[in-house]
Each structure stands twice: as C-alpha cells, then as structure tokens.
Length: 181
Image (cartoon, rainbow, N blue to C red):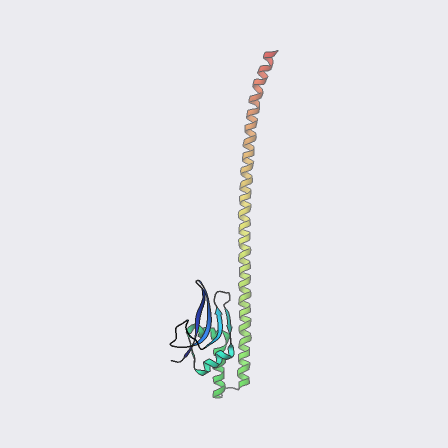
C-alpha cells in the first residue's frame, strides 16, 4: 500500500485536535506513522493549521495519497497549487520563476481574503453584542419603569389609607372633647 497523508486524532471528547501524518495505508488511524508534518485544530475560529510546507510537497511528489480532509487542508495552504505549478514547469508550460510569481500572487490574495473574513466576523460579533446590550437596556428600562409605577401606586394607596385612618381617629377625639367640658 502506498503512503497516505492523513489525520491522527488527539484531544478530548468534543475538543478534537489532529496531527497531520504520513502513514502506511494499512496502519490504523491513530497507530504507527512515518512522519508528522503538521497539526490541525478545527476548534479555533478560523481553524488553526500548522504545516511543514516543504515536507508536505515532498511527500506528495513521492506519491503519498492525501485523504479528502487532508487534501482540502493542503489546498487551503497552497501545497496542491504548488504541486500543480511544478508539474507545469516539468512539462515546459512555464518557467520556475513564472510559477513562483503565480504562487506568490495566489498566496497574497488568499491572505487578504482570510484577513477580510476575520475582520467581517469580528465586526459582526461586535454588532451582535451591541444589539444585545441595547435590547437588554430597553428591557431593563421597561422593568424599572414598571417597578417605579408599582411603587408610586403603592405609595398612593398607603397615603389614601393613612388619610382615611387619620380622620377616623380625630373624630372620636373631637366627640370626647365636648363631653369633658
């Protein structure tokens, strides 16, 4: 069996962390491997990928077959594009300098796009947080207004009770005063 480039799972339950390894196709997923070429952490946003670019390209050129997930990781990092461009150089379709210029242009565009996505996500998070705070402050203001209204009603009721009790107490006192005279 040819060598495979695949993920080896590590980490806790619900918090995966992967090593990107070169392994014999017959070896179990988390078993023996030939070489570790990187790591992949899908929990972070955006996913954190650390990859030894040169080793990955070397193993692809040697014939190692990546799994589907690893193929997408290698594509995101540009290893697959670099391999494609190097094949074009070998066939004589372009020079090595032209291939390098194309690759560097692609990398700059990719980094700019990633930075823009991260910035948009941060702005969206801030806008959502601001909207939640505004909604919460409206709810708190409504609650405070309702509490103040209830307290005003309770104070008015207490004042009305006191007003009713005060004349009732004064009336018998007035009646007692003439009896003494």
